[in-house]
Amino acid sequence: MTAIAHPSGHHEEHYPGGLLRWLTTTNHKDIGTMYMTFALVMFFVGGLMILAVRAELFQPGLQLMQPEFFNQLIGVHALVMIFAALMPAATGFANWMIPLMIGAPDMALPRLNNWGFWLLPPAAILLTLPFMLALFGIGDGAIATGWTFYAPLSVQGGMGIDFAILAVHILGISSIMGSINIIVTIFNMRAPGMTMMKLPLFAWGWLITAFLLIATLPVLAGAVTMLLTDRHFGTHFFNAAGGGDPILFQHLFWFFGHPEVYILLLPVWGLMPHVISAFSRKPTYGYTAQVYSFIAIGLLSVVVWAHHFFTAGMPVPALIYFMFSTMSISIPLAVLFFCWIATMWRGAMTFETPMLFAVGFIVLFGIAGLTGLVLADVAADAQYHHSYFVVAHFHYALFAGGIMGVMTGVYYWLPKWTGHMYSEKLGKLHFWLTVVAFNLTFIPQFFLGLAGMPRRIPDYALQFAEFNAISTVGAFILGLSQLLFAWNIWACVRGGPKAEARAWEGADGLEWELPSPPPHHSWETPPVIR
Amino acid sequence: MDNAFSPEDLARRRSRSARLAWLIGGAVLFLYVAGFFLQR
Image 1 (cartoon, rainbow over the protein chains, first blue to last red):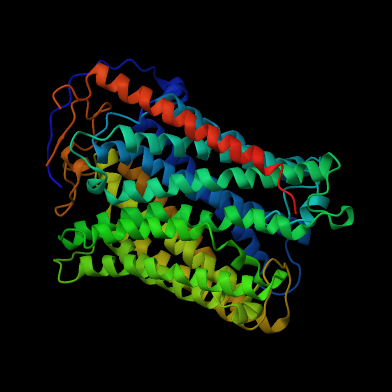
Image 2 (image 1 turned 180 degrees about the vertical axis):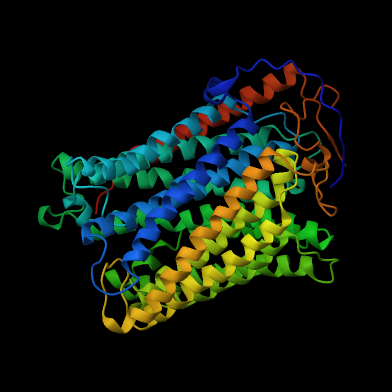
């Protein structure tokens, strides 16, 4: 797609300075920056929690903490990483990039946008506050059920669960408001001439994500509200002693929980073609196929949920249905992989940091897909369920697929956001340390799972010691290497070589028609789409 | 196309967006409330 960029008119700036600017801003770039900053901070908070877990698991026996605290760290780590790091990062991308990429002057509903962001910090405080309160002898710490809130454990647990229920409600409201804003922006704010089938793939990925969020978050909110009434208002939705059914909770939770995986991944799959195309210096291969694959994955994602609890017991026809429907997702996903690789095929490829992360993403996320097929098999899942194999699998999906995808996007668009080039040397060092340390952390966990080590335990049998020690060393290298990422971003924000409007030679799309950084108010005159 | 993103055009686009947002928000609220009436 090409465009003639019109210079933005001189717009009088009327926003306040200092903290008040960030509290009251309705500018999509400011809000995008706040989302990204919040996500980065929470990424380190969640990371610190899991480093404490890995330190405990370095050798058998209890060294550093009691099992209750261990369980709390595991649960809050997952909730923080999913709801407070990955999802806000994706929303940050959407805020920054969708208006620039579709030629809109801002999001359609800017005040809703501000509100959506400012709900996040209180929710993050609610999630982590019970840790602090417990230090002063108030309550019994944070949620200790894992991120899944499974009943009946969650019906019986301490007040950390109430905090988490409230936090999830607030995070859900924030996400729904963000999603509504993204949908109406894409539908109503596109520049003249930008038809839906000219929409950048990143916007398409987010459009499907937004619909998934709207369809599934109310179900999660309903489920945790039912849990709250079971805990405090005498209902028995999930309490077998009162005629309720704990398995009902699992159905409700995973009706949200499985689409959530695609909610985390679709924005990344949307940005990947832009990066691969830029550094292969070729147009994206199979635009239409990718759009229809996104739609197919979105539709399939809401009809496969029960594969998360094959072992909980369900009729054989249901097992067979959920097995085959789950496996069928690999077809549109394989189309995406094919398109990414076909875009690179015979391209004039160079391997700057975003491209390194993109290629690393394809290889490692491929492993997530293949191990996912293994878990989708009902017969095999009986062996692997609740083992470290599952932990390794979903970290290949959510770290290699989700977080490395976010890093791909950050390195790709950072010059656009800041107007400066980041340090390529540091970026490449960050990539290689991340890839090596990530595999060092999680390959041993596949073997641990195959050997029978269950997940969510603070102590284990002696035969698991070596692989756990290797995994912990890997985790600490992985954690420390992320400091390079933070430093590189910080240094890039502060200064560095000036970035051109089109920071990457092969980059295509409306965002590159604007100067780097773009003016505070961009596309006040719409671009012409040919 | 000439009047695209003029104040009138933007106001039109924003009010169309607000109407759609209320419609989607209403549907979300309906889903949430319907959750309470789920039975085994």
